Length: 93
Length: 289
Image (tube, rainbow over all chains, first blue to last red; front, top):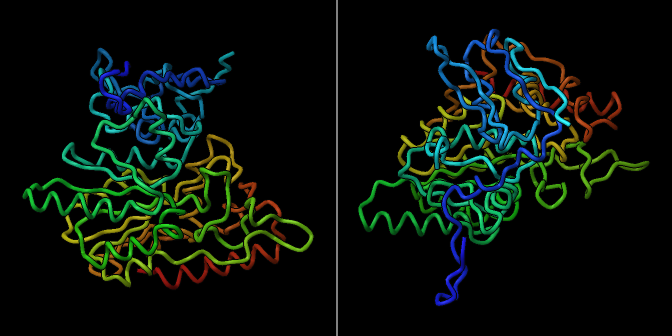
Protein backbone atom coordinates (compact mmCIF):
# COMPACT_ATOMS: atom_id res chain seq x y z
CA UNK A 1 0.00 0.00 0.00
CA UNK A 2 1.41 3.38 -0.95
CA UNK A 3 1.09 6.75 0.74
CA UNK A 4 -0.05 9.63 -1.49
CA UNK A 5 2.38 12.50 -0.74
CA UNK A 6 -0.20 15.07 -1.89
CA UNK A 7 -2.51 13.94 0.92
CA UNK A 8 -0.50 14.11 4.09
CA UNK A 9 -2.96 12.18 6.27
CA UNK A 10 -2.27 8.60 7.29
CA UNK A 11 -3.75 6.18 4.73
CA UNK A 12 -6.63 3.97 5.89
CA UNK A 13 -6.01 0.24 6.14
CA UNK A 14 -7.96 -1.47 3.34
CA UNK A 15 -10.65 -3.94 4.48
CA UNK A 16 -9.28 -7.43 4.95
CA UNK A 17 -5.69 -6.37 4.26
CA UNK A 18 -4.55 -8.51 7.19
CA UNK A 19 -4.70 -11.38 4.66
CA UNK A 20 -1.22 -10.18 3.61
CA UNK A 21 -0.03 -11.28 7.04
CA UNK A 22 0.59 -15.02 6.56
CA UNK A 23 0.43 -16.21 10.17
CA UNK A 24 1.09 -19.81 9.07
CA UNK A 25 4.77 -19.05 9.71
CA UNK A 26 4.04 -19.15 13.47
CA UNK A 27 3.14 -22.83 13.33
CA UNK A 28 5.15 -25.61 14.97
CA UNK A 29 2.46 -28.32 14.57
CA UNK A 30 0.24 -28.86 11.55
CA UNK A 31 -3.35 -30.22 11.71
CA UNK A 32 -3.92 -33.10 9.29
CA UNK A 33 -7.56 -33.99 8.55
CA UNK A 34 -8.42 -37.61 7.80
CA UNK A 35 -11.21 -37.29 5.20
CA UNK A 36 -12.25 -40.89 5.91
CA UNK A 37 -13.10 -40.00 9.52
CA UNK A 38 -14.33 -36.39 9.04
CA UNK A 39 -18.14 -36.31 9.26
CA UNK A 40 -18.41 -32.69 8.08
CA UNK A 41 -19.97 -31.34 11.31
CA UNK A 42 -18.15 -27.95 10.87
CA UNK A 43 -17.36 -27.65 14.60
CA UNK A 44 -13.63 -27.08 13.89
CA UNK A 45 -14.46 -24.38 11.32
CA UNK A 46 -16.71 -22.66 13.89
CA UNK A 47 -14.18 -22.80 16.74
CA UNK A 48 -11.01 -21.88 14.80
CA UNK A 49 -9.85 -18.50 16.22
CA UNK A 50 -8.38 -17.67 12.79
CA UNK A 51 -11.46 -18.91 10.86
CA UNK A 52 -9.00 -20.59 8.48
CA UNK A 53 -10.65 -24.01 8.33
CA UNK A 54 -12.94 -24.02 5.30
CA UNK A 55 -15.63 -26.66 4.76
CA UNK A 56 -15.41 -27.91 1.17
CA UNK A 57 -17.53 -30.47 -0.68
CA UNK A 58 -15.62 -33.52 -1.97
CA UNK A 59 -16.53 -35.13 -5.35
CA UNK A 60 -19.16 -37.24 -3.53
CA UNK A 61 -20.85 -34.04 -2.26
CA UNK A 62 -19.87 -34.57 1.40
CA UNK A 63 -18.53 -31.63 3.46
CA UNK A 64 -14.92 -32.08 4.61
CA UNK A 65 -12.72 -29.77 6.72
CA UNK A 66 -9.74 -28.16 4.94
CA UNK A 67 -7.29 -26.09 7.02
CA UNK A 68 -5.66 -23.17 5.20
CA UNK A 69 -1.96 -23.55 6.04
CA UNK A 70 -1.23 -19.98 4.93
CA UNK A 71 -2.86 -18.76 8.16
CA UNK A 72 -3.12 -21.78 10.53
CA UNK A 73 -1.10 -20.96 13.68
CA UNK A 74 -1.11 -24.61 14.76
CA UNK A 75 -2.89 -24.11 18.09
CA UNK A 76 -4.46 -27.58 17.98
CA UNK A 77 -7.97 -26.50 19.08
CA UNK A 78 -9.53 -28.28 16.07
CA UNK A 79 -7.75 -31.56 16.90
CA UNK A 80 -8.65 -31.29 20.62
CA UNK A 81 -12.34 -30.56 19.99
CA UNK A 82 -13.07 -32.78 16.94
CA UNK A 83 -15.88 -35.11 18.12
CA UNK A 84 -14.66 -38.01 15.92
CA UNK A 85 -10.90 -37.40 16.35
CA UNK A 86 -10.42 -36.92 12.60
CA UNK A 87 -7.69 -34.30 13.05
CA UNK A 88 -4.14 -35.13 14.13
CA UNK A 89 -1.40 -32.63 14.99
CA UNK A 90 1.97 -33.53 13.45
CA UNK A 91 5.37 -31.81 13.76
CA UNK A 92 5.82 -29.11 11.15
CA UNK A 93 9.54 -28.43 11.46
CA UNK B 1 -10.93 -11.05 -0.91
CA UNK B 2 -11.06 -14.46 -2.53
CA UNK B 3 -12.24 -17.34 -0.37
CA UNK B 4 -12.54 -15.08 2.67
CA UNK B 5 -14.84 -12.48 1.08
CA UNK B 6 -17.79 -13.57 3.25
CA UNK B 7 -15.79 -13.43 6.49
CA UNK B 8 -16.43 -10.20 8.44
CA UNK B 9 -13.11 -10.88 10.23
CA UNK B 10 -10.39 -12.37 8.03
CA UNK B 11 -7.44 -14.55 9.08
CA UNK B 12 -4.05 -12.86 9.32
CA UNK B 13 -4.75 -11.09 12.62
CA UNK B 14 -2.11 -11.26 15.35
CA UNK B 15 -4.03 -12.89 18.21
CA UNK B 16 -2.26 -15.70 20.09
CA UNK B 17 -2.60 -19.21 18.67
CA UNK B 18 -5.70 -20.75 20.24
CA UNK B 19 -7.10 -17.41 21.45
CA UNK B 20 -10.48 -17.97 23.13
CA UNK B 21 -11.60 -14.41 22.45
CA UNK B 22 -11.05 -14.58 18.69
CA UNK B 23 -12.88 -17.92 18.63
CA UNK B 24 -15.90 -16.22 20.21
CA UNK B 25 -15.58 -13.21 17.89
CA UNK B 26 -15.88 -15.55 14.88
CA UNK B 27 -19.20 -16.83 16.31
CA UNK B 28 -20.42 -13.24 16.78
CA UNK B 29 -19.38 -12.28 13.24
CA UNK B 30 -21.31 -15.18 11.71
CA UNK B 31 -24.48 -13.77 13.30
CA UNK B 32 -24.05 -10.24 11.88
CA UNK B 33 -25.24 -8.99 8.49
CA UNK B 34 -23.14 -6.76 6.21
CA UNK B 35 -25.33 -3.81 7.31
CA UNK B 36 -23.55 -3.40 10.66
CA UNK B 37 -21.14 -0.84 12.09
CA UNK B 38 -18.66 -2.10 14.69
CA UNK B 39 -17.22 0.02 17.48
CA UNK B 40 -14.25 -1.34 19.42
CA UNK B 41 -12.94 -0.38 22.83
CA UNK B 42 -9.19 -0.65 23.40
CA UNK B 43 -8.05 -4.17 24.08
CA UNK B 44 -6.64 -7.34 22.60
CA UNK B 45 -9.28 -7.45 19.85
CA UNK B 46 -8.42 -3.94 18.71
CA UNK B 47 -4.62 -4.28 18.67
CA UNK B 48 -4.48 -7.77 17.16
CA UNK B 49 -6.87 -7.10 14.28
CA UNK B 50 -5.71 -3.63 13.22
CA UNK B 51 -1.90 -3.60 13.20
CA UNK B 52 -1.31 -0.58 10.96
CA UNK B 53 -1.35 -0.52 7.93
CA UNK B 54 -3.45 -3.69 7.90
CA UNK B 55 -6.97 -4.46 9.03
CA UNK B 56 -8.64 -7.84 9.43
CA UNK B 57 -12.13 -6.29 9.37
CA UNK B 58 -14.43 -6.34 6.37
CA UNK B 59 -17.19 -4.38 8.13
CA UNK B 60 -17.13 -0.64 8.98
CA UNK B 61 -15.05 -0.56 12.17
CA UNK B 62 -14.14 2.27 14.51
CA UNK B 63 -11.90 2.60 17.53
CA UNK B 64 -11.63 5.68 19.74
CA UNK B 65 -10.39 5.96 23.33
CA UNK B 66 -10.34 3.05 25.79
CA UNK B 67 -13.44 4.12 27.72
CA UNK B 68 -15.17 5.76 24.78
CA UNK B 69 -16.77 2.90 22.79
CA UNK B 70 -20.27 3.50 24.23
CA UNK B 71 -20.54 7.27 23.51
CA UNK B 72 -19.02 6.82 20.02
CA UNK B 73 -21.63 4.15 19.25
CA UNK B 74 -24.37 6.46 20.61
CA UNK B 75 -23.20 9.16 18.19
CA UNK B 76 -23.22 6.74 15.25
CA UNK B 77 -26.71 5.56 16.21
CA UNK B 78 -27.95 9.18 16.44
CA UNK B 79 -26.64 9.89 12.92
CA UNK B 80 -28.23 6.70 11.57
CA UNK B 81 -31.53 7.64 13.22
CA UNK B 82 -31.46 11.07 11.56
CA UNK B 83 -30.75 9.42 8.18
CA UNK B 84 -33.51 6.84 8.88
CA UNK B 85 -31.11 3.92 8.26
CA UNK B 86 -31.78 0.49 9.82
CA UNK B 87 -28.03 -0.24 10.20
CA UNK B 88 -27.14 -2.10 13.43
CA UNK B 89 -24.45 -0.83 15.77
CA UNK B 90 -22.43 -3.37 17.76
CA UNK B 91 -19.81 -2.56 20.41
CA UNK B 92 -17.08 -5.05 21.21
CA UNK B 93 -14.97 -4.61 24.33
CA UNK B 94 -12.96 -6.60 26.80
CA UNK B 95 -13.66 -6.91 30.50
CA UNK B 96 -11.25 -4.06 31.35
CA UNK B 97 -13.12 -1.64 29.10
CA UNK B 98 -16.47 -2.89 30.42
CA UNK B 99 -16.08 -3.62 34.15
CA UNK B 100 -13.68 -0.79 35.00
CA UNK B 101 -12.68 1.86 32.50
CA UNK B 102 -15.84 2.30 30.42
CA UNK B 103 -18.42 1.55 33.10
CA UNK B 104 -19.67 5.12 33.65
CA UNK B 105 -20.06 5.78 29.93
CA UNK B 106 -21.78 2.43 29.33
CA UNK B 107 -24.24 3.37 32.07
CA UNK B 108 -24.94 6.63 30.20
CA UNK B 109 -25.58 4.78 26.95
CA UNK B 110 -28.02 2.41 28.65
CA UNK B 111 -29.71 5.35 30.36
CA UNK B 112 -30.30 6.99 26.95
CA UNK B 113 -31.79 3.70 25.73
CA UNK B 114 -29.90 3.69 22.43
CA UNK B 115 -30.54 0.55 20.38
CA UNK B 116 -26.98 -0.78 20.52
CA UNK B 117 -25.69 -4.28 21.22
CA UNK B 118 -22.79 -4.27 23.70
CA UNK B 119 -20.63 -7.41 23.70
CA UNK B 120 -18.10 -7.94 26.48
CA UNK B 121 -15.41 -10.58 25.92
CA UNK B 122 -14.56 -11.56 29.48
CA UNK B 123 -10.97 -12.84 29.89
CA UNK B 124 -11.06 -12.04 33.62
CA UNK B 125 -7.97 -9.76 33.45
CA UNK B 126 -6.27 -7.05 31.37
CA UNK B 127 -4.81 -9.57 28.92
CA UNK B 128 -3.55 -7.00 26.42
CA UNK B 129 -1.16 -5.25 28.82
CA UNK B 130 0.17 -8.38 30.53
CA UNK B 131 -2.49 -9.90 32.84
CA UNK B 132 -3.25 -7.25 35.46
CA UNK B 133 -6.33 -7.83 37.65
CA UNK B 134 -9.57 -6.17 36.52
CA UNK B 135 -12.98 -5.84 38.17
CA UNK B 136 -13.79 -9.15 36.52
CA UNK B 137 -10.91 -11.14 38.04
CA UNK B 138 -12.41 -13.84 40.28
CA UNK B 139 -11.33 -14.55 43.84
CA UNK B 140 -8.10 -16.57 44.11
CA UNK B 141 -6.77 -15.91 40.59
CA UNK B 142 -3.07 -15.23 40.18
CA UNK B 143 -2.35 -12.11 38.09
CA UNK B 144 0.69 -9.83 37.98
CA UNK B 145 -1.05 -7.30 40.27
CA UNK B 146 -2.48 -9.98 42.59
CA UNK B 147 0.56 -12.27 42.89
CA UNK B 148 0.57 -15.35 45.06
CA UNK B 149 3.06 -15.76 47.88
CA UNK B 150 3.47 -16.49 51.56
CA UNK B 151 0.81 -13.97 52.58
CA UNK B 152 -1.45 -13.99 49.57
CA UNK B 153 -3.38 -16.54 47.53
CA UNK B 154 -4.12 -14.39 44.50
CA UNK B 155 -6.96 -11.90 43.99
CA UNK B 156 -8.77 -11.16 47.26
CA UNK B 157 -11.82 -9.49 45.70
CA UNK B 158 -14.82 -11.23 44.20
CA UNK B 159 -15.77 -10.89 40.56
CA UNK B 160 -17.98 -7.88 39.91
CA UNK B 161 -21.54 -8.87 38.97
CA UNK B 162 -21.80 -7.03 35.64
CA UNK B 163 -24.90 -8.99 34.62
CA UNK B 164 -26.82 -7.51 37.56
CA UNK B 165 -25.52 -4.02 36.73
CA UNK B 166 -26.86 -4.45 33.18
CA UNK B 167 -30.19 -5.77 34.47
CA UNK B 168 -30.48 -2.86 36.91
CA UNK B 169 -30.48 -0.50 33.91
CA UNK B 170 -33.66 -2.23 32.70
CA UNK B 171 -32.16 -3.65 29.49
CA UNK B 172 -34.57 -5.63 27.34
CA UNK B 173 -32.01 -8.34 26.52
CA UNK B 174 -29.11 -9.51 28.69
CA UNK B 175 -27.25 -12.78 28.09
CA UNK B 176 -24.16 -14.69 29.17
CA UNK B 177 -22.30 -17.36 27.22
CA UNK B 178 -18.85 -18.89 26.85
CA UNK B 179 -16.50 -19.50 23.90
CA UNK B 180 -17.17 -23.25 24.03
CA UNK B 181 -20.70 -22.78 22.64
CA UNK B 182 -20.37 -20.99 19.27
CA UNK B 183 -23.95 -21.72 18.17
CA UNK B 184 -25.28 -20.42 21.50
CA UNK B 185 -23.29 -17.19 20.97
CA UNK B 186 -24.58 -16.76 17.39
CA UNK B 187 -28.19 -17.36 18.48
CA UNK B 188 -27.92 -14.88 21.35
CA UNK B 189 -26.43 -12.18 19.09
CA UNK B 190 -29.24 -12.64 16.55
CA UNK B 191 -31.85 -12.51 19.34
CA UNK B 192 -30.29 -9.40 20.88
CA UNK B 193 -30.30 -7.58 17.53
CA UNK B 194 -33.95 -8.53 16.97
CA UNK B 195 -34.94 -7.14 20.39
CA UNK B 196 -35.70 -3.38 20.42
CA UNK B 197 -33.68 -1.29 22.85
CA UNK B 198 -30.15 -1.71 24.25
CA UNK B 199 -28.79 -5.20 24.89
CA UNK B 200 -25.77 -6.71 26.62
CA UNK B 201 -24.00 -10.01 26.01
CA UNK B 202 -21.09 -11.22 28.12
CA UNK B 203 -18.93 -14.07 26.82
CA UNK B 204 -16.28 -15.91 28.87
CA UNK B 205 -13.23 -16.18 26.60
CA UNK B 206 -10.26 -18.08 28.07
CA UNK B 207 -6.88 -16.39 27.55
CA UNK B 208 -3.87 -18.65 26.85
CA UNK B 209 -1.14 -16.54 28.60
CA UNK B 210 -3.51 -15.11 31.24
CA UNK B 211 -5.01 -18.37 32.43
CA UNK B 212 -1.72 -20.23 31.86
CA UNK B 213 -3.27 -22.99 29.78
CA UNK B 214 -2.16 -24.74 26.58
CA UNK B 215 -3.21 -23.32 23.21
CA UNK B 216 -5.60 -26.22 22.58
CA UNK B 217 -7.31 -25.96 26.00
CA UNK B 218 -9.19 -22.66 25.69
CA UNK B 219 -12.45 -24.29 24.55
CA UNK B 220 -12.15 -27.03 27.20
CA UNK B 221 -11.73 -24.36 29.92
CA UNK B 222 -14.77 -22.44 28.64
CA UNK B 223 -16.82 -25.65 28.66
CA UNK B 224 -15.74 -26.63 32.20
CA UNK B 225 -16.70 -23.14 33.43
CA UNK B 226 -20.28 -23.90 32.38
CA UNK B 227 -20.27 -27.51 33.60
CA UNK B 228 -19.02 -26.50 37.06
CA UNK B 229 -21.74 -23.86 37.42
CA UNK B 230 -19.21 -21.02 37.80
CA UNK B 231 -20.19 -19.39 34.51
CA UNK B 232 -23.64 -20.63 33.43
CA UNK B 233 -25.19 -19.86 30.04
CA UNK B 234 -27.91 -17.32 30.84
CA UNK B 235 -30.52 -15.28 29.03
CA UNK B 236 -32.74 -12.55 30.49
CA UNK B 237 -35.58 -11.19 28.33
CA UNK B 238 -37.34 -8.16 29.78
CA UNK B 239 -35.41 -8.60 33.05
CA UNK B 240 -36.68 -12.14 33.62
CA UNK B 241 -34.44 -15.23 33.50
CA UNK B 242 -35.75 -17.00 30.39
CA UNK B 243 -33.03 -19.58 29.71
CA UNK B 244 -30.22 -21.09 31.78
CA UNK B 245 -27.78 -23.98 31.49
CA UNK B 246 -28.69 -24.81 35.10
CA UNK B 247 -31.92 -26.61 34.27
CA UNK B 248 -33.41 -29.94 35.37
CA UNK B 249 -30.90 -31.93 33.28
CA UNK B 250 -27.87 -30.11 34.70
CA UNK B 251 -25.31 -32.23 36.55
CA UNK B 252 -22.74 -29.98 38.21
CA UNK B 253 -19.10 -31.06 38.03
CA UNK B 254 -16.74 -30.23 40.91
CA UNK B 255 -14.90 -26.94 40.34
CA UNK B 256 -11.55 -28.79 40.73
CA UNK B 257 -11.63 -29.88 37.07
CA UNK B 258 -11.97 -26.26 35.96
CA UNK B 259 -9.52 -24.73 38.45
CA UNK B 260 -6.66 -27.22 38.40
CA UNK B 261 -6.21 -27.18 34.61
CA UNK B 262 -5.30 -23.48 34.86
CA UNK B 263 -1.92 -22.15 35.99
CA UNK B 264 -3.52 -19.07 37.55
CA UNK B 265 -5.27 -21.30 40.15
CA UNK B 266 -2.51 -23.88 40.64
CA UNK B 267 -1.52 -22.44 44.05
CA UNK B 268 -4.95 -23.01 45.62
CA UNK B 269 -5.16 -25.19 48.73
CA UNK B 270 -8.14 -27.54 49.32
CA UNK B 271 -9.68 -25.00 51.75
CA UNK B 272 -9.54 -22.29 49.10
CA UNK B 273 -10.96 -24.57 46.42
CA UNK B 274 -13.87 -25.26 48.79
CA UNK B 275 -14.46 -21.51 48.99
CA UNK B 276 -14.76 -21.33 45.17
CA UNK B 277 -16.99 -24.42 45.24
CA UNK B 278 -19.30 -22.36 47.49
CA UNK B 279 -19.59 -19.70 44.77
CA UNK B 280 -20.56 -22.39 42.23
CA UNK B 281 -23.07 -23.92 44.66
CA UNK B 282 -24.67 -20.51 45.20
CA UNK B 283 -24.92 -20.06 41.40
CA UNK B 284 -26.87 -23.33 41.21
CA UNK B 285 -29.51 -21.71 43.46
CA UNK B 286 -29.52 -18.24 41.88
CA UNK B 287 -29.60 -19.24 38.21
CA UNK B 288 -31.80 -22.34 38.42
CA UNK B 289 -34.65 -22.32 35.93
